[in-house]
Image 1 (cartoon, rainbow, N blue to C red):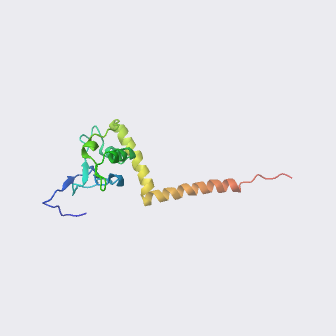
Image 2: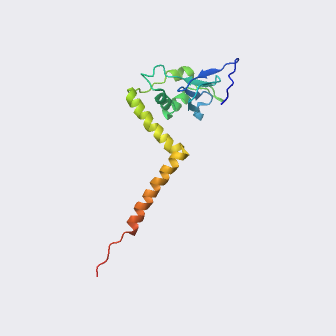
Image 3: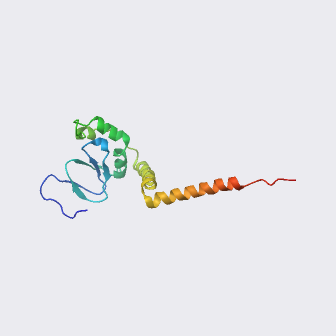
Length: 150
């Protein structure tokens, strides 16, 4: 991470909790949930939830990381060789907004799933443990014999 902030040019600021979406070639599905404050260039869209009491920022990230959103973004992009997402169309994207409690519950589930799938220190040990239990179960089934009576 750089400590230098440019004083000229067209930098766009973002803060922790914003969602950043790569606007060039939306089919590449470049998206990031900001875990720090910083700046980026004009080819990255910075999306910020207006009111945390209505939409939880991490829920907004998951909505925007979905296949539905990226299909919508691709279908509304402009250009052929290097298409760009249509900012106006993106701002019109419609999604379900349940209660904050449900949003937080959904985010918790999705974050745990993401950790299991992508965090090598969490996912692999959990998978090894599950396979070990599976192995022990089938081993015990295969090696349990009924005694024969004479």
